[in-house]
Image 1: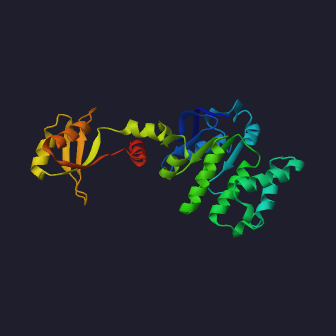
Image 2: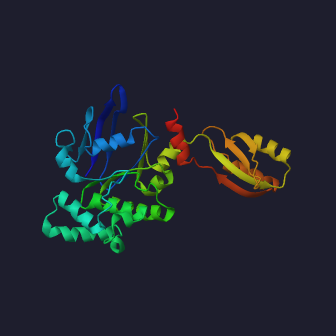
Image 3: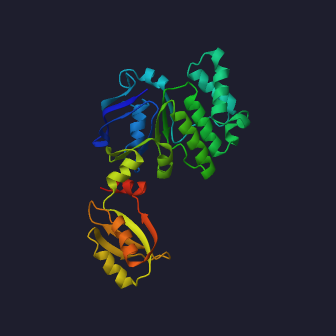
Length: 309
């Protein structure tokens, strides 16, 4: 079921926490929702989950409007907020029974659905424990189970791996990827590597406005300027090498990097590539080319570029 956000605005007094944004998330897509603190991520997610009404604009889950029919929208959405509010004095299995009852799952189907969630979320060994006895990773699993128990078409996850150790992060990430094959998922996170590994597409918001939208590869390509190579060449002395590289028409600048590898940074002229000419130069002079590493724009650099303007 698609999520369609249309001209969404949320005001707090004179301040616009979300400023006239529009985007669509398709069924079976996992969208990574990024932005610095105060950018409007959580506000947008709360509008989608009907936690409050937008000041203007609308959100549709399929063909259902959050402003016109919020109660119906709630039945289609599973939500794991950042705080993951659980009743810690309850055993896991009792808590899931309680959530299933709230969601109106028929009594005859309730036990089967709960056991399915226990299996999907890897809670078999923990299901009779008090939630207060669980590690943070298992509490997150319980949070995912409560968000999924009514089999929603849409899943909204706000910082689902906050406070987890590396092993737990990998486990939750794999679980989200499996869920995302069948559902529409929006995942908010500050961990860029996690978003890149988990999400099909990335949307970056800053100061209430969308500033980037695309796959990780598309965002990196759009942010790339001149080609940058880190090259290792053995044979000539520094002056000879510097002068020879500077004579290549496609080379804009040459810099000797202060590193144990002794690499040279070569920046190509705008829109050009110097790889072939650097290789040919080494062949012509019988120099040993020990490395040629293209430096790719990192997602962190993309994020910084679009959120610091």
